Image (cartoon, rainbow, N blue to C red; front, side, top):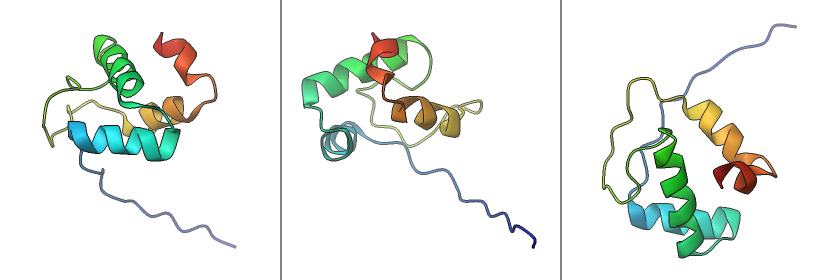
Length: 80
């Protein structure tokens, strides 16, 4: 049996409102915590400034690795 691979385009980056909504609906965290974690990701060079309304990823941004880290049960620990 062969495995067929497929690719999807990167999703558009979230603007601030969409980020807060996704954090609430997906992770169950409030806006203050969401912005705190977004700022921590920014300070580590993983995302653009959290209050920027942008739709462009940096060329070297690894979306799969970033989302994998955020999905880990201990993600809040390494975000500080």
